[in-house]
Image (cartoon, rainbow, N blue to C red):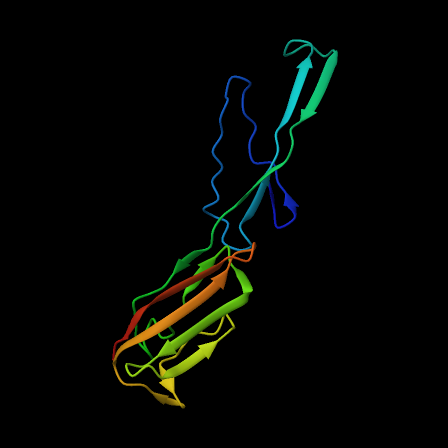
Length: 160
């Protein structure tokens, strides 16, 4: 598997196994573009325990095939300023963070927070003061590495 330009061997399977499923659950950074190829090695050699070297070995490589994982977006539905979950900050995986946009709106449609920095979340303040407890609308826009835009809208509840 190649991911973010790094080649890693992910499996060695017996010749009777015809399928393999790769687990990408632990990979949370990058653009989501995974590329694979198969390397088949055939060898005729001495039986196990025989010190004689392999008599014949042949390697064959398949063509490379790539798959793009779509961005995964997790948006919490509530937060508590000055509490344990004190910053409202959505989590995105496999997205192009150069094209990130988060906006927060009050109940009258006024934009009260905006950032293009995925590390910067909303702390519940407007003009340096804590906003009123209640529901606020958000708009989150991210792009895949292929340039497709994904927009998520919803509400976040600020709890006292």
